[in-house]
Length: 107
Image (cartoon, rainbow, N blue to C red; front, top):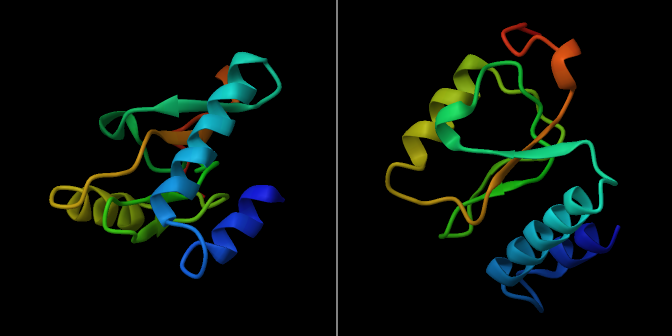
């Protein structure tokens, strides 16, 4: 909830980069303490069907993909295209569904 509130206020009070980096720090902390079902992933490893667990924001402040979105072929293509000229802040986090989830599944 804190991240949501900070994000809501980021253009008015807080710099969006500070909020994005705080969210990244928080995600990393949860993963290290094993209290998260998320995992960081490189852009080249993204596949259709993966579920994004943290907002993906670019250096210019564009929110490319919101948390909770399942990547479609179109959204993945758009993400790759936009980030050629506008880098992502931090890492990309997906829900770690373990080996039970088939990431090639379209849904």
